[in-house]
Length: 578
Image 1 (cartoon, rainbow, N blue to C red):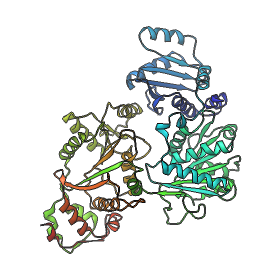
Image 2 (image 1 turned 135 degrees about the vertical axis):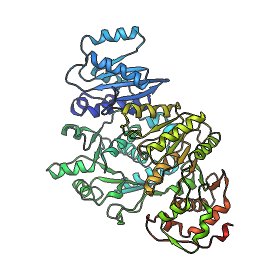
Image 3 (image 1 turned 45 degrees about the vertical axis):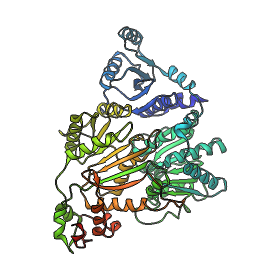
Image 4 (image 1 turned 180 degrees about the vertical axis):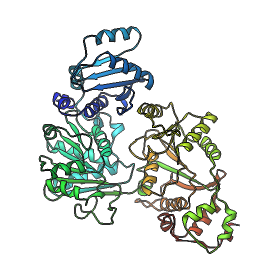
């Protein structure tokens, strides 16, 4: 049965993108680590990269009607040099030209271990795969936490008792996709042959969901993607155990007269988007959450953007844990959040007594210029506070990221690299550069990533234990996503240290609110030790400044949500500062 992960039908009836992901999943099942999709325009001859036994493997995947020839061999070997990989592999759905094996032998004589995987060898690799899910074979890496187990069991109870739906509300970093995958694993044991339609509102999220589900699936369970880039054959859609789809693609198909059937369950990621017409069309077709297919919803918040409720589809959540509760209950890594007040011009506060200002006006009056040298020095000092330090620095611009990386490397306490969509000259970052950077970071060859616009979501780096904020963002969603890069639990990770140098009065309000929330008692009636938010000046605790800011800012929740030009700030006298 294990060969279902790779079959002739899937190879022939899906896209070249699907074949690349098929290879990815096969590698994960066979014990490879750091498996990453590199294939895209400008990939330099690599489609999938992975590590095993200390060696880097590079895969060039060809779903061609014609056989692969010598030019692809040359391209793949060259790609190995670009990516600093050790083992080149060519996967070809149609086999290889007669001269290629001779080319392989000549390369072997030169010490290049080229491997050739044609369709029969690919199928043999799949047949050798264990059928049990990775989550069962590597229990330490995939063990359910108590609240996740509770969420799965409650969702399963809703299903077995004949209810219409279940809603899982978990903050970023708490593993709501893991819960959904485990729910389907148990459902498929209870109902052999169960099939799920997994929906997201963006094409990119569909790919992330498919990969996140793989560890919970048996090798004999097949997955396909249906979105704006890929549309599997109808036979494949009816064959696949799980279809990961962009809701817009499915709605368009239904609008043109298509039909859906055979799905036991519909799983909706970020289900606070429910209510849009395209969701109504898809869920209505399957009567999902209304007596037909069982509806499982996942969200980091139970509220829709328009303020409407989700009661039309769900009763109350089976589990509801926000970021603060996750920290207080120990479901996320302990956090040592340090907000630096060094660049506040306290003298200017003396002239603000009783006046009202917008956040933009306050920021202009209150903060001095950028302070990169001090930031790097604080990071160097913090480096010694963590075992196996691994850091992300969130920067506002590409120029700033390159400057920060240069300053960090000049002190030589670690190696820093920049990751962004393009460099300061405006040249787009190639897939080779992006993959090589993430590979170096995952393997510890780079200790710091100076990131601009590519690590807010979709990159899972659970062992990050230092996060540095230098980017001003007024989006709470982006802030939580960035903070969430460091909050995930990982073996050997005691805490995450957050160094916040953001010069914006609303960020101080957010810090004060987090400080107050973490000081409250948890469900056991105790304040959980290990989490703290401190205000610091010259890297010593600035208690007086924090007290003044709390008095001065007043309603911190109102301030945190204020726009640039909203006059909501009114300040008491500044005499307490002196």
